[in-house]
Amino acid sequence: MKSKTIILVLVVYILLSVVFFFIRYLDIKDFARADQQLKLQRVQRVYEETRKRIGKFYVTRGFANINSYGIKQAFETKNAKNLHRFSLPRWQVIIKENPYLESFCFYDKEGKLLTYFGERPPDRLLYADTQAKGYDGFWHDAQSFNYHAVSVAKDAHGQTIGYLVFVINPKFFLSEINKLTNIYAYILYQNKENKRLVWKLKDNPTMDEIIVHNQVQHLQKITIKDTPYISYVIEGRGWGTKDDFSIIFLQDITYWKTLLDKSIIQSLIILLLLIVATSLLINYGFNVILKELDASNKRLRESRNELEHLNENLQVKIKSEIEQKLKKEREANEKERILVHQSKMASMGEMIGNIAHQWRQPLTQLSSILINLKLSYDRDKLSREKFHKKIQESNEQILFMSKTIDDFRNFFASQKHKKRYRISSVLHNVRKLMGASLKNNDIVLTIEIEEDFEIEGFSNEIAQAFLNILNNAKDILIEREIQDANITIKAFTQDNRNTITIEDNAGGIDIDPIEKIFEPYFSTKHAKSGTGIGLYMTKTIIEKNNHGTIEVSNGLHGALFTITL
Image 1 (cartoon, one colour):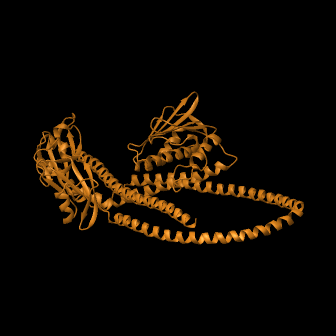
Image 2 (cartoon, helix red, strand yellow):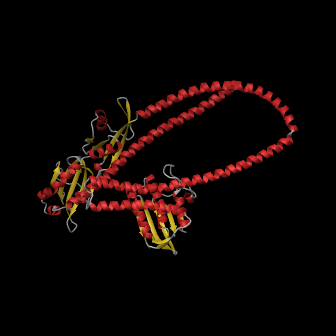
Image 3 (spheres, rainbow, N blue to C red):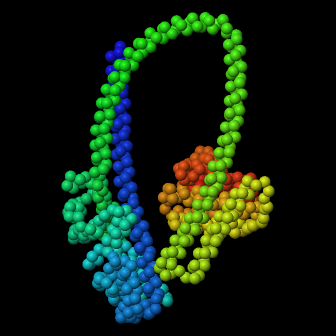
């Protein structure tokens, strides 16, 4: 019996251990895949954002140069000398800003080269006859493969009179990737003659040999001098299909391979140790159980004698036990009352702490204003008007922070004074407070006031309620990485009721029932991001303090809050 039990327990234990260690092995592999995917996403995001930013920047800069003194007239008369003379100061500035800028050139309306700065560009501008406005992208011309930002010059009648082109070396994008991700990547382009062109920031003969002479595949495992790597390939789109290229980088996966090998060895060692320890413990346990059985039989006989003695005084003991039980229940009830009171006090303290959390938004805005002032000052672009404007914006944030204290104090006060205000003033204040934060996260806030109605109540509280909803919308848009993120606020009168709707395009709320989001301390966020108090306070402000209603539903694009006042 003893041997069979030991064998059965060990077999079950070994099976469970194997399953556990297999799950651990899979977890490590999942972490490795997640790390690889994160690196790929970071590089891809940096490349896409850099291309979007640099294209907009240089096309806009080109239009500025076109509209500067004498440039349009020089284009119309194809006066290359004046184009060169009037644009020389700008070239001297921009070449210092970007060392990867290869050429700054001018073409006539037929796409024929007029003049240039830097390296000589092709005599003909590709894709010129297909575009009526500025464009940018990668393409391979007769000489090389580069990134081009093209601005179209037009006369007073809207007719094309020429093109201004910035030519940028692809290494610029590699430098941005390295600066923001600390990853050295390669750009590989294969022209129609199947000749491979490779751009890199630094020499690495071993890796260069692999990139240039091998057809590297995405997520391909490569070993270089006994070091394992995994390759990443991001497909870059050129202006034409023949202009497509690849961004390639390698990741050293020695750490993950070593971690997997260690996990296997550690698992085997631990499994063997546990098997030995379990065998010894089971054997010891059986011996202890046998001894305990003998001791239990002895205690059972003694207990039987004691039970006979206790039966004689049963009534007395029952009465005593009942009295003690009643006494304990009274003590327990008193303790429970004290605990409830303490819990209420703790909840109130937590609520006050979360109210103070509302200061973070205006503090962020103040930080943004100060950084903007410093950057403008460092670049000698801080005008007197801009300085006073930023000071005014800072005072508004400080005033709002001061008002926030009064608003939350009034929230708990029994006496408050109402005043009449227009909904447009509240919504414009909300835009002013949230504008910088939303803009920094590429979120568009649209306010549509169909009817600017007047309300009697507490405008600062209503503004705080709107801010709570907008902050939640902003957080979910950022969390879900929504492209073309937007929030729309509408104000109108319907059925003699003043109505405000706030809708985002984040995909909606996955809670059933959806009204649970208004419960105190209910939150779908991480504990560091929220405590679930914001929407509860919003509902209290609107319904209790301002005698309105608030409802939530999932609209066509995302969460839809409907407020009536």
